[in-house]
Image (tube, rainbow, N blue to C red; front, side, top):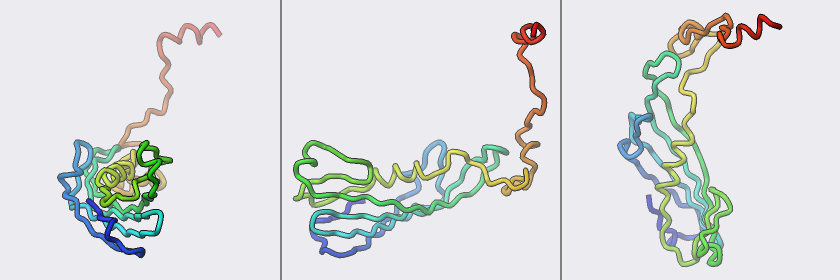
Length: 165
């Protein structure tokens, strides 16, 4: 997803991209649709501000019941490219949202930024919400699904020490 910033006028310009689901699928993530990327580019005298929206549908395995569930990704993020010859040559970045580029830069490539943001946007815990101990996805009692043990098991190594108290 390359954006030619050299020919842009100093106003907002919209770009639409489609990323094939095969490009972002991994062992733990399966998109069921292509990922749509909308980039709104605002060019000013000293910087290029890109506001990006990512959307798509994916499947995940529920961490509780191990059933396949569907999820929707619809997230926004922003990248600012600042024209600065001194910092662009040294590769200095203040953070992930601000990148320094040479004033004569013609094209910026947002492929890796979009891919990285997709992976950090997905929840680490893949389980639907629970209300009053019931899973909203499968409507089962959460304690029964994950089989929580109520009693505290004592390690046999510590039994003798506890008896000597």
